[in-house]
Image (tube, rainbow, N blue to C red; front, top):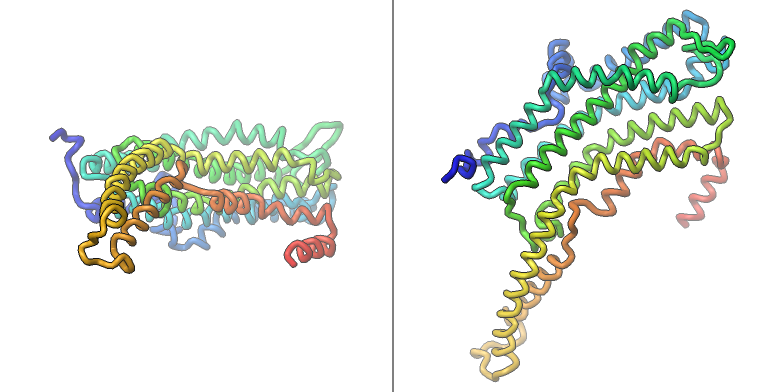
Length: 402
């Protein structure tokens, strides 16, 4: 037997399965360990949130107070800048807290490939190597260096075209059409925003590692079960990976919510003006989260076709014998029709065939999409109050429910 086809150790002996994590690895993780911010992802989670958010937000508060722009002195003082508060007090903590959710749920998702025996012995070795490859990429120092280098062009774009407001703010004053950054603004652009951008880019890299691993697994010869009741040939558990990434989507929704709130409160914009941005955000995030799962569609459809063919042949043979015994002759071997096991077997066979016919190509459904969309737009929902008075909004909600 070729080396690629040799079975390896039993699933419980595969350390890569037990230790699989998209979070526990890379230079930053090692730095956090040395800083005593957690040997494991759930160790000192609150401390990590406070340290990272504090690094981004607390110096801005102090510098704005020193420069007299904390409460006033400019058109948009620090505490009135909703976008800044949301980015560093909501989005950053969510990006950190998402690590715990992803760490706990993704490990269980990977384990189910083996617990459900979807990876046959002939493919175990390649599955093993796919895990090792994913962990090696996750731990790549070069990858995190590239992420750091990518922050600088992103920061320049964000500073010049996205976040900059037209009026004088706590981080920059506008004179003769030109912006002049103060000390608080220097920290804002050099430290605070890069922290948020690095956390976000690092998550995109982790999702890439996950997508690459799934693509490699989808290339294996899998032992899918066409009649599995999850109606995904046994791969329905993959939808749980999408739920695990929901906090990341909420962080993005919070960031764009703060951006829109600033434009509404300080520049007189209206919420409907940002419909395109919101739709693009939702569509982009759905693509990032759900596209990696679509690589299994050909395998699921192939299993469905095989199941329809095999179960169709089985049903044909069974029904011929059933008709011969119960419809074509009077000899039923002394067994009454009422309570006969043949009837139950016929029903079970019909149910199995129906399950195969209802098998979906994608290992997620409408409920998954709705949950992810809600996780993204939930932080934007409070902005509806800028269009509809709170009392009227409550009235509409009650009328819709009751």
